[in-house]
Image (cartoon, rainbow, N blue to C red):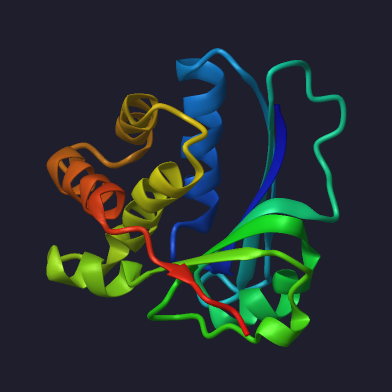
Length: 184
């Protein structure tokens, strides 16, 4: 099992931390192999950013990839850049509050799943946990990793005192109904 996963959006959405949390869940919590690279725009907030994560049951010899098995995208600009770089038959998971999909640029048989992560996070009282809502949904859609491994990893990365909010955000995403978009 080797998967190339890209998390993409803009600075301030917690894109980089998403990669770190899932990487930790796979490597430290589940005993698999993972390699992470990250890319920031020149702006502190609002600029493009992405995290590439390669997960495998064996050693990851090279951490870079051009095509993703899974793209988790939290901004329209990120979709414009990375949407066409998903393998045929791959998965795209979007924050439906922030991303509209142009299916004409997608490879064949790509599966698109939507969740209103930002809206759900706002309903929890903190828009900043939209990334954790998205991680819960990612875990449910992909079925790649035990949710308990991800919860443990979340607690290693979130600020002290926010554990309950982040657990609630994760559970909100995980419990959200699977919403697979029908593409034309």
